[in-house]
Length: 157
Image 1 (cartoon, rainbow, N blue to C red):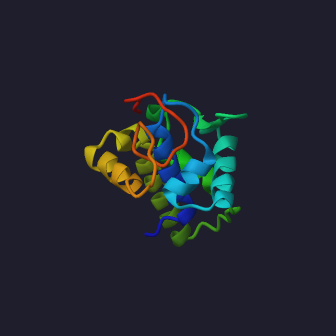
Image 2 (cartoon, one colour):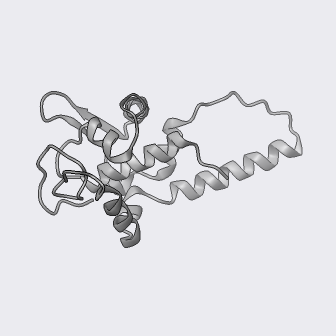
């Protein structure tokens, strides 16, 4: 099964915010550089995440984005659903339709059972995220990510 690139980037961006939770707003430019995503793509993703209440924007100098709620209260399923392009379903009652509906229900159940906090708290995932940021020429105090803002030392999800 292949996860759409937009969903993968959105989860990575949300993990970035979760790692900086409590350390102040994160500029989209930081997410763009740290995640290797173009600014226009990051903007598209955050527009959808904002519409679904998963992030909130703080305008002005020193502004950026924060999680819309606690990392414990953001299941991965909500991130995926925010980015979905809904296509009207045709219910023809076929066996194929029933199979796909059941599979979709199970996948959604799995994704809604895992939160951003679950991922950030796993040592191997946290280490992987931190390694990803080590390629940057300047670093955030919280996670080592590329940043030009100060953050609360030790702030975690």
